[in-house]
Amino acid sequence: MYVVPPPNGLDPAAGAGEGAEVLRGYQAWKGSNIFFLQGRFIFGPDVRSLALTIFLIVAPVAVFCVFVARHLMEDLPHNSGIAVMAVVIAFTLYILVLLLLTSGRDPGIIPRNLHPPEPEVCDGTEDGTPQLHLTRVKDVVVNGITVKVKFCDTCLLYRPPRCSHCSICNNCVERFDHHCPWVGQCIGQRNYRFFFMFVFSLTLLCVYVFGFCWVYITRIMDGEKTTIWKAMAKTPASIVLIVYSFIAVWFVGGLSVFHLYLISTNQSTYENFRYRYDIRANPYNKGVIENFKEIFCTSIPTSKNNFRAKVPKEPEIPAWMVGGGFVSPAQGKDTDDIEMGRRKLVWDEAEGDGYERRLSTEDNVEEKDGEFSDVSPYSSRSVAVEGRREGTGTGTGTGTGTARTTVHPRRSSWGRKSGSWEIPPEVIAMAAVAGGSDPVSLGSATTVTTPTSQTTLLHTTSPSLNSTL
Image (cartoon, rainbow, N blue to C red; front, side, top):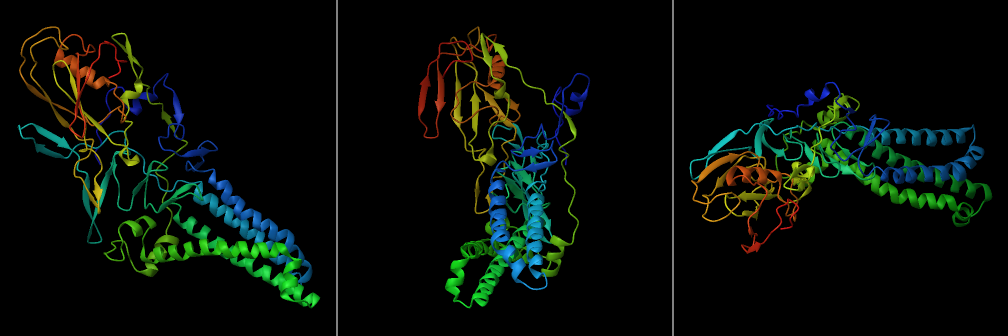
């Protein structure tokens, strides 16, 4: 896929020269993940929930070993009680290893592009000005069935089939299944196998503890020739474990059955709830046997990310001193994120004594019933500069200028947050070209057009960029 080359001075390869600060990949990571052991383990931002999951597994097993398995070691003949203790300990360690393999590895994150791909569509506006834009959705054919792939505005790439962007980890994940808060990680192509084995093994552990607690109660009944109620009263720990394992098996057991169904039909949880392949054709279904072989008998693909690789540190954008005021470097960053649900703002600028700002829904993700808008917010826009009006404006002279139209790439919403009224540096630079010698001296009024078509005049008298509109 063709990617637009980076601007001068921002090429990562150029930053690896002498004097450039070099970081590890995990230190420059733009996702929300948390790393341990210098990038050897990658977790989701909710990794703290992993401690609760481990406690819910280890605590009942410890109670079982102390109050049940220890007594069975003495009661069961031929040292079979020792096997009960050894199996539960080994099985618990096995489950914890599966938990670590599920939560501590790359689930299949697709590396981000530094720049969006080159616009592929050229349309003409009403006045004949060409306009380039990225198509919002593309069609690809999978096993004879057309599948739509969507452009990701955060990762600046077209997601492969079965890929989705996780809003919690802020990454595009291959064969995205879901984000599991219990393991603190996305479940995707590289850890789904371990996730299913973890859940299914937990189900077996619950059944194991539940069964041997009843075995211990039965041994008490037979040894003391008493009723089941008196036997249960002699081992309250067994009663607690029976109730606990009975409740837990409904959760992990039900989840295991659900994922067995998903594996047999070659679906992910995300696809099952979103696309409803039970009522439409599933392009990935290969038959039950082949579907199971795909999950359990194929090699796990290597990670596309090297979190320990040395990468050059991205240059920081310094604050600019303009007209006695500062322009924040944060305004040069794309802080709006469609994936996270924030609306974008579009600025229309006109030569003269003011700026017109309006809220636009053109760039928002419109996704209803599986339909998407066709234009990406990374489209180029045609910006019309109106003729200069007579009077004193942002320029140094008066008169009537000729109207001209320019094409300004990616005018969507760089460096602006919803509700912020700061003038970004792009607008100032455009005003300098259009208005004359003083690019930061704003006129006496700013016209603001809201979605409800109300117009408000906001007066400003300060020449600095820190003026509050």
